[in-house]
Image (cartoon, rainbow, N blue to C red; front, side, top):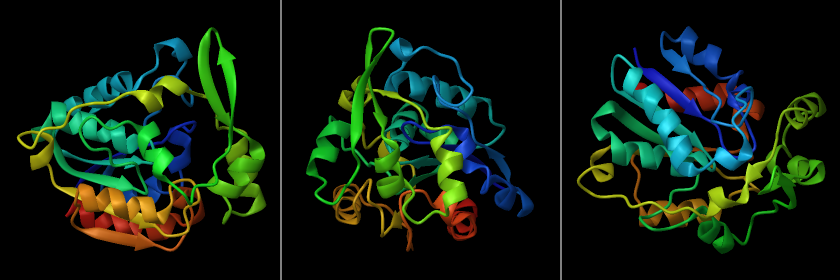
Length: 239
């Protein structure tokens, strides 16, 4: 039995994994899908949010686990799980990057996003309690996040996505071979992703190799559009 900890990406919450969690649990695994600070049901203010804070929150969950966890990060959360691995490598059985950003030491999410020529994500800037944030427009969400979802699923997601501080995408962190580098890494590609293009996914993995690698033929949100296929890709990574 493995212990999976599923970390959502920007603008989302633990709710996005609700179709995957029971599939992993039915196979006998323990599963947690928390809300990051300020997301889902968590009420932390936008001014308190950062990648460092996300890493601290996830690190607390990992530290409380009874055994090393399989730590899965989607999209922006690739940077979160990397931070946790640098802090507590012995507490992690494997890192899994699900169509996720895979930053090198000193590299920001913004710098990676600027390299992406396939992404079709459009956002609008808003200020929330004095904090500069972005939010994904419904049109962009339909086109880039959920283009392969049925209408009911799209509406379910649109009712739940929220803002993200701009500063989160500007933060950097240092990763060392002695700590982060010794944690096994896997990558799950989504070839039809319009939020993090398949070309960028492969470029990032070329710079920071992962093994094993799985491929799903779907868009950015397989937890909603292809939960069975995603669960089947995750299950061997818990062995």
